[in-house]
Picture 1 (cartoon, rainbow, N blue to C red):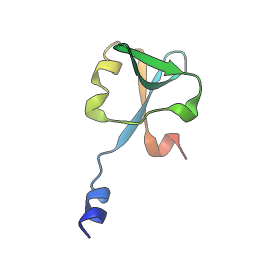
Picture 2 (picture 1 turned 135 degrees about the vertical axis):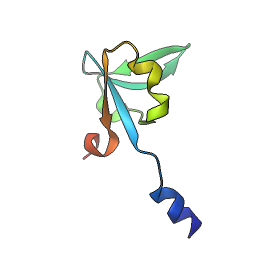
Picture 3 (picture 1 turned 120 degrees about the vertical axis):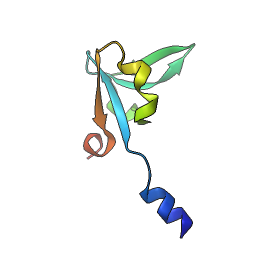
Length: 68
């Protein structure tokens, strides 16, 4: 029962898309890595998107909108 409740309270996840319509897929050597292969997108909670969105060149897409 506790597991189910924890999953229901899960923080919304977001996919980060840059101005070239590429999605964030992770870090490599401390640098952000983006890919045009949208199936590789790495959903993040809102608090983990701050550095990616500081430049103003990235857009957040809610995970349930992205994968549906």
